[in-house]
Length: 91
Image (tube, rainbow, N blue to C red):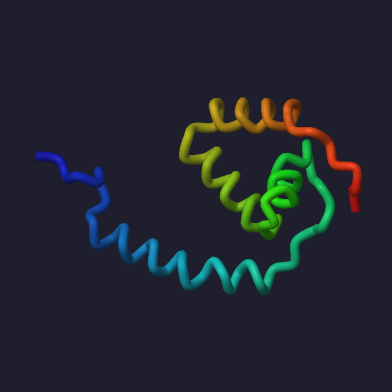
């Protein structure tokens, strides 16, 4: 019988989530983020629209691209780059 969570057990997932919950806020506050858009500006535009830190959105975007597979994740990123309206107040 295979474990419910694949190669990781429930305890390992809880430990990784706890470490991420402790380390990620410290990393976000200590690492300055470049204020303007990069590449297509998707993460920057999403962060501005939702009122979130740009670095947090960029980290979540990279994680989503890697977890969904490089191809589908990049296709969604390119689609959002074409669909999202450009902001008038670029820094």
